[in-house]
Amino acid sequence: MERRQAGFSSLFITIIISVTFSAINQADARDRSESLRPLLKHFNENRHHVTNPQGKQRVRQFILTTFQDLGLKVWFEGFKPDYPQYATGVNVVGMIPGTLAGTPSDRLFVIGAHYDTVRTTFGTDDNGSGMVALLQVARQIATDFEGCPRSFSILFVAFDFEEWENCKDVKKNPKCACGTIDCGSRAFVRNLTQFTDGSLSSFGLIQGAIIMDTVMNYNTTPNSQRLPPIMKQFFPETYNELKADQFRGDFLTVVGRQVDDRALMNLFVYHYSQTESDLKNKTSLRWVKLPFQGQVSKLPQPIFYALDDFLRSDHVPFWNHSISLSAVFLSDTAELRGYMTSCYHEDCDGPSKVTPQMLQFLQKTSDVILALTNDVTKMSCPSNSVIYSKKRSTTTSGGGMAAWGVALLSIFMILLGAAIGVVATVFYQRWKKQQGPLVTTNVQANSQPL
Image (tube, rainbow, N blue to C red; front, side, top):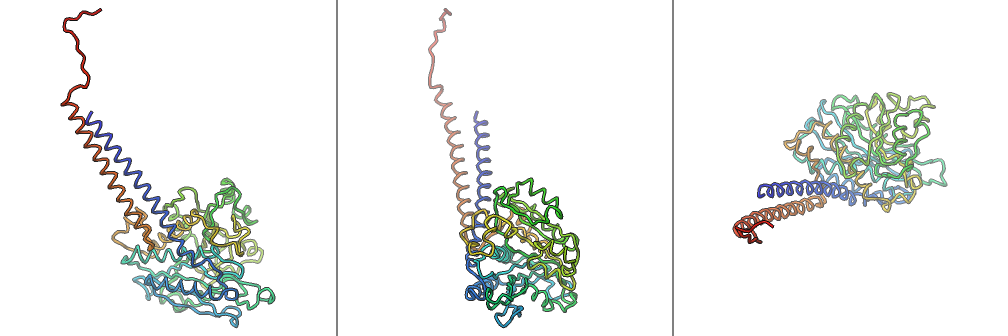
């Protein structure tokens, strides 16, 4: 009986520990995703050079200060947009040098997102979300992996003037500065000679780029996802997957050219499958492999217009470089999903739309980029295996550490209570043996059966 009781107690303790650790992991995931809110609040105002130049300057300075506080090598990259008489464009660049930085053997990896907005929006999803993911990855690398060397360098680039306007319509768009899309990333790619000598050989290669634009909107409602007209014809497999899922907007889109960006896309898909989140299996990845190679500018016009929905952000200048560079584009599909069907480039793209699930969705994306970046830059760390097996990711907010402290105290109290219970049971059984049965029956030895 005592052995059985001890077995039950041991099983009870095991179950409690397992449940508690599961709760800790979930709490930690929530803590980390909630830690994105303080970052996101800096992108909850308009960031246009005409309608809110002060807001744009505040965000620019916040990005710079954040990079500096994390110990990155940081600089402003000024450039002239299409109409420089009205504004100067400013990309903000933060660099984590690898051990091969400045040598022909370096293979720079770029993580980019734009921080500007159009005139008519707060721009929380477009593109505060991409900027928050970028800053979160920088923060995690600088804090969680501090002291872990990596061979190749990382460039974090906050692009200005991704958004463009019709500058010919002076009445609607006075003081228009960028008249064609991607002024900032086009300038950055043109200026790659500051990292190379123009031949992409003397000071290393650009091995690839991850570009984010609107990556937070998450919606599990059936038919919350719209699709470009060409989706069914050009990408029938992806279309059928979405149809089977009742066109829910619960996935991240990964866009790349089916040959030029295949290696980077495959690696992203792999790390996505290996990365857990509090959303569990309630989110997925849909990739779009575009059926062309090389530069977008060389596409026949009918093909270009057919694929236009996938060619509208800062990845395109990388593809259009004289030596076409690998770049993968991440998006929640912008105006094709949920509330953004009516709030895209409008003032309702603001903080009131953000839900805890959206933050968890965004956190998973940043976790995947983190794992991918550590992989492609060849990071080496004594605790690397532990970090990946436990998906350890400490934030600077302190919320995660506080949760761990409470959780450890809870485990101690549970184990202490269980141990007291076991000891009490053993003492009770011994006392019971000493006392004998509580009820006795007097039976006459010579009594006869009836």
